[in-house]
Length: 269
Ligand code: DGL
Image 1 (cartoon, rainbow, N blue to C red):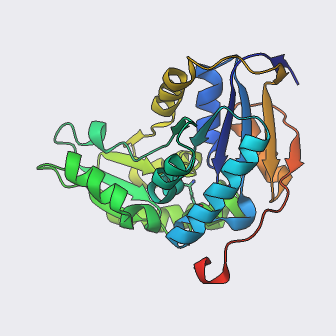
Image 2 (image 1 turned 45 degrees about the vertical axis):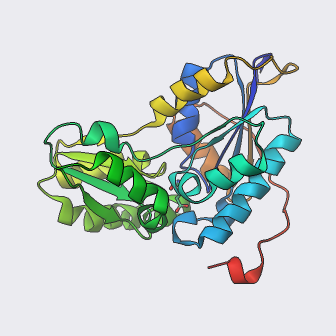
C-alpha cells in the first residue's frame, strides 16, 4: 500500500457504511493518511441507546488517537447525532467532523422530500433542531428504517433480504421526488431505492463532509510518513473488503480491532 506524508485522519462508523464517506475523503484529500475503523461487532448503532453509542464513540476515538490521528471524522449520522457534542467536550483540541442528513439543500424548494434514517437519528434532539432550522413550510416525510443498516451490514447490499427491506421501507414514500439519505449505509442501496421509487433524487452529504474535512485539516502539520489507507474491524473482514472495493477503494488489508472495555450493561439498549 502506498505511503504519504499528509495529515493523519481517523474515520469511524458502526460498520461498512462509513466507507461511502471514506471514498469521498480519498477523492478530496488524496495526500491524507486515512485510518478507518468499522465497529461491526456493535452495529447497528441506530437501534441502541444514546449511552451505548457514546461509549462506543469514545472508545473508537481513543483508539484512533492511539494510532496518531490528528482529526476524527464521525462517518455515522447516528453517532454524530448522539455523541459528537460530548466528543468535542472530551477532546476540545481535536478537530471533529460529523455527518448529518442534508435537510438544508433538500428543503430549499418545494420538492416532495422524505428522510430515511435510523430510528435513533430521527429521535435525536440534534435532528429535531436541524428540522426546526430548515423545515419551514415544507415538512419532509420522516421514514425510520429499523433493520436496514443491519441487513446491509450482515447480509450485504445486494442480498434479497436487504432489497426486500428497502422495498418495504420505501413503499410509503411513493410520490416523493427527493430522498435524503440520513445514514451512511444507505448509499450502498441506492439502486434498490430507485428500483422501488423510480427516478428520485438521492441526497448523500458525503462529499460535503469531505470538503469540510479538507477545510478543517488544511492547517494541520503533515504526519510522519505512513500508509495512505488503514482499516480495522471487529466484524467480518471480507465483507468490509468487498464494500471497500465496491466504493472504489481497491483491494484493502483489514486488521483486527482490539477489544476495548465494554459499556456498562445498563447502557447496552
Ligand atoms: N451508518 C450509521 C449512520 O449513518 C449507523 C447505522 C447503524 O449502525 O444503525 O447512521
